[in-house]
Amino acid sequence: MKKLKIETIKEFVRTGKIRWTNHCVVRLFQRNISQEDIENSLLNGEIIEEYENDYPYPSCLVME
Image (tube, rainbow, N blue to C red; front, side, top):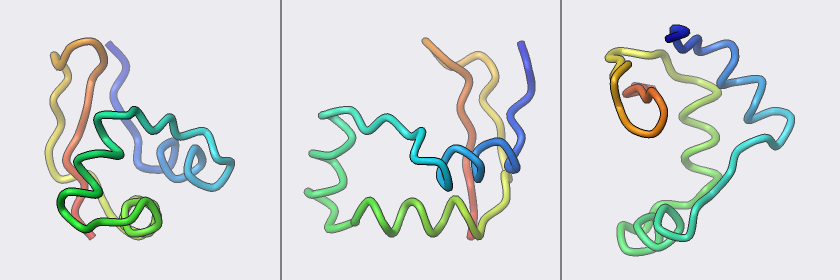
């Protein structure tokens, strides 16, 4: 599986290619986190841990 790159994630944020699922939006609301907060963290952060075997897609932990 391809390795995630923070540059690719940042490009997706800049071009509006993030898909917000209903589940995600509900969790953000419950935790009082805005989509803008997430986008800013992705644009200014770095990947600190990768989960290549996550289903259905690989994922990662980003720290700002």
